[in-house]
Image (cartoon, rainbow, N blue to C red; front, side):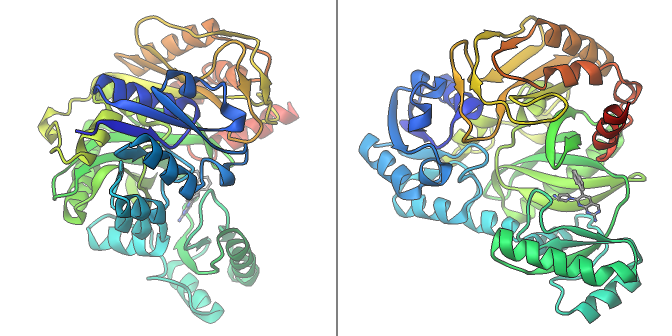
Length: 449
Ligand code: MV4
């Protein structure tokens, strides 16, 4: 096992990783920017190193600074959290070159899944269902038109190295195609330095359902069920739950087994998430995330498995600590992302948190690095914390969520809490009948009302 882990992140996820290290008896090193000198993750770590100015590119994403911080503190492993360097294959490779373990998958698997075309080809070859579309990169507008004709409109043009919905354009008909292609090409060149595109049939109203997996890198892999992440605005998830209200146990076991088998074949190591669109009872692979995700706690709550501890154990060379048969799904969990944002305009609201009181009680979990007197800097994402609620049934979970939201006090900055208080009274939310467009439609209606 490792003696000392450096946490290359900040905020709630840095705390989450610290807690796992403490549970395993491993010493911790925090790194921080000058904007985070008073941050909770710095206070709770055994040691800390300032790695640069507020700008993430010069601190939390500064590879030489982070490697230097490992060298001076004698850390033997790095946990990257999510965002920042978590899916940077070069970072994983550099650490290994310095004999420092990267707590995550191999750099080859990170790079493979970072290329959406290669990821999709791999998924297909491993037996995962994929969205009908081009077999690989589009080579010309004429070819694109041909493929669109074959699969039928509407089609979606996607960037091979895209993310967050950028470089993605719908063409409703042949008349739209040329402009969709040129816009997507320009956006992906500007955003990702690569103009490579591919094409898929556009699914009109799917749900976003992702499967959590875990592998040991030697051919053993298991699934930990799915999360429904359909409630999102501008590709930012705000609410995630498990199990998905759309699936029954048989469907869950079936997609889970398919994905676990694929990950065994791939010899995937560490935690991973295989993303699907789900429409009319069918799954369509879209992408794979090779990191621990923001919403991992909902899976932890229904399985009782500590995903971060498991990542650390596997990175140190241990086998998986549980088998597929050991994984039991119990109850229902919902996560609400509490952001420092205005609840209707979503304008970021950085600043001083003057009062802070976290809810508690049975089945209530808060993952947050906030405290009364802390500052939410304007330089990073606006996540203040995550409220995760667990109960025996979805109905009980919604009741408990209402109780927890009512107890929660965060003053000094705007938060998204009032939005969640409204959402839990909406019939579609109560029934679990929502797709990836539901929230944006709801917000539009609320605006005009
Ligand atoms: C799609 C799609 C419909 N059809 N692919 C958006 C980001 C990227 N990760 C994949 N995305 C989508 N791909 C096909 N063939 C609709 C989306 C999409 C979406 C997906 C998941 C969650 C929220 C979304 C919001 C808008 C569009």
